[in-house]
Length: 84
Image 1 (cartoon, one colour):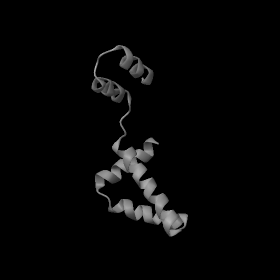
Image 2 (cartoon, helix red, strand yellow):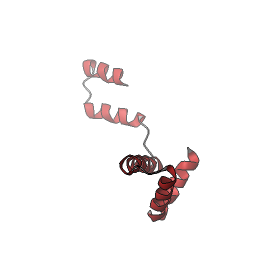
Image 3 (cartoon, helix red, strand yellow):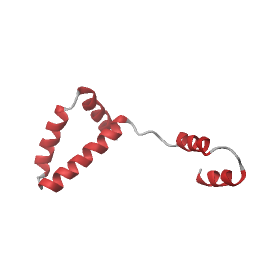
Image 4 (cartoon, helix red, strand yellow):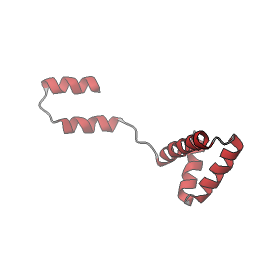
């Protein structure tokens, strides 16, 4: 795609906006469950690093955290884990 963009910039008068949308069409959208999983993983890594807790304590914290989320977020996380 990038080579096509470079070639088009040198030979074609089409706008860059159109090329941007062509590039974006080829990128996969991240799902809600994937983005939630990324956020949860980053949070857990930070908690372990900052508070130096054990794996067991982290599992308890994670379960407690997820339990406090709205039901649709809990279901999205469960679905994301099953799909992975």
